[in-house]
Image 1: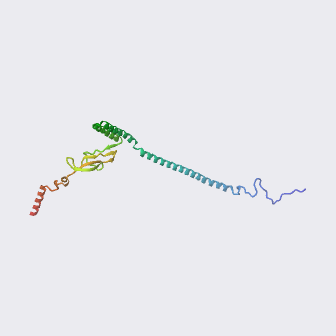
Image 2: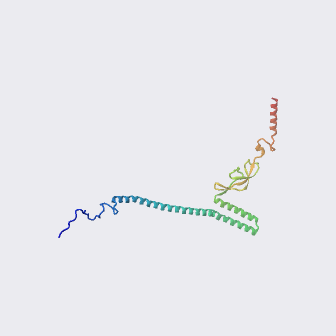
Image 3: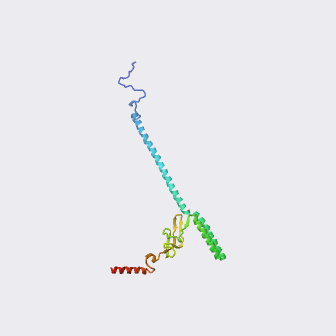
Length: 224
């Protein structure tokens, strides 16, 4: 019986190493250091993509919150515009109630003096309500004319008052805090022609003394 000897040309195979594979190679035959480098290069890209997604989500949420805030502010502004005078009108209703009672009482009794007294009381009550909200009447009578607070409706020749003085208030003006709501319609004293012309008389003619002085001056000029 003869024992077969292994051929000398056959290359020994290492245990656990498949044929055709190199030591330190990956499943596809790529070196392990190349795969490791590719994996390491993908990690920063994934981190940047995650950060981008987070920032985009945050931007969308902030945009939605701003839009909701804008709508809420618009609704509140509209409500404020509609109901800004609520307190003032509530106080004004008390004055209208007093006016209705005064009119009804005058109709029942026919007492005009009582009606006048009631109207005066209502007028005081109304002005007190206005004052609580910063509305003050503009004092104009006897004051120098102020174009920012007064409106000259009529004029009259100046008498004892100096020109430019308010002699009558035809329509009372009002001021809200430091802003004019309505100027006062007033009558203003105006300088007469004698005052405006300086040396002219009431008819606009020169006085006799001035005429004499002019003639004397003319004579002197002729003689020279």
